[in-house]
Image (spheres, rainbow, N blue to C red):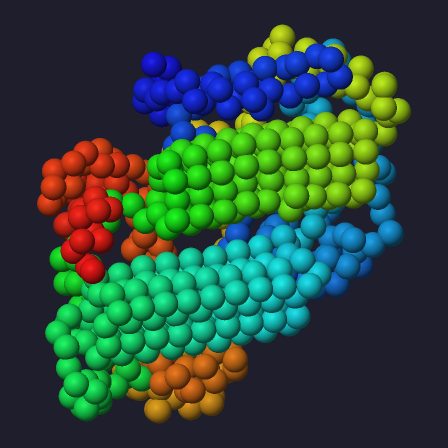
Length: 565
């Protein structure tokens, strides 16, 4: 078996991997250019892709065209990659005031292509945020489309009034949620779908008015419960009458931080480790391996993926087909690319490419085709390094360029150094924790940027938070104050929209900053990795997202369904 050149672990390139790689082989005219065997293991390939994806690190800066103050995923000064290139607001980026062709370069077949591509990366303007023009009142978000009145929410689509959340779709009036779809009035929920008015509920669907619970399906009015199906008025998995249940719930005031925190800790430290779980979560899937899959077929080692088929080693997205090592949605025949999709086809070693076909080594290109090494092009065809060529000349030059890349082992490489972001700014840090020294040794960048402290009338130290420990005691003046995070010491503020939500839903003011709350939610999810184990009931061999060090009782799908129904 090959050895990963980064982590030195052995990994397998399966016959199915090779079959798909053969299917993905790019053809330029009559010439085919086989994709080299991966040199990195699946985990290191995933880490590299995620290092191109800055979702949550936002900065104030000026648009380099109109000089307007904007929010951006790029720092206001020199970037972690050492460059200072132009960043444009959405209006300027999509305007006719400039063109990516202004930065065109001639291809030099006597120089390494990566050197030329790196030079392009240092010059061409970037779009400030990866958001659509379809949002309304959503200035402080990233990776968002078709949303309204959202704040500090990321990878969020078709949603309204969603605050401090991540990967939320088709939802509204929710706060501090993650990986939720079609949810409403949900608070501190994770991996939920079709849930209504739930508080601190995990891994559940089709449930309403449930609190501090996990693994529910079709349930209502459940408190501190796990593994229930179509149950109503349960506490600690025991049935109550409606009157008894309501009397017990009245003993708790979830607007009090003390009561909220006790229930939350009980869920995490007592109930979650003691629950029965199925080896992986797959819904309506056929012949798949991986976790958190919905409506997929023939997907191998994929995670957080839906509506996909014949994909391998892909995560975060849906609607993929016949692709490998990808992040994105609605694409086919794509390889080793990040943030791509919207009816795209034949994308290779590219990131932030939308509605495009036959794209190689390109970045932030839209509605285009036949691009090689291009950045920030729109509605273009037959370009190399942002320079246009007639179709036959483009084909001939592309063939020569790839042949040169094959001769010096550049073909098939997608170096981390092309990412403009610091490793600690990106999603890679969520899944593969590294310190600065190690990240730099592995050829990633690192961000040392420190946000300025907010200018406020007053700072509430963490030791004094009990004074406003109940939402009924919180004055309007808190909007002019900053709160010291009890874990990180960072200062954070409460916004009017947020305070209104807490009061309306009887929730306490948080004592931890948004980044810390996100980190803690994320830690409750399984890693994107599978282990070989045995079902702890029938003994059958299973692949599972729960390692042997975990305390949960792991069942195969058949035994799990038999236990909860």
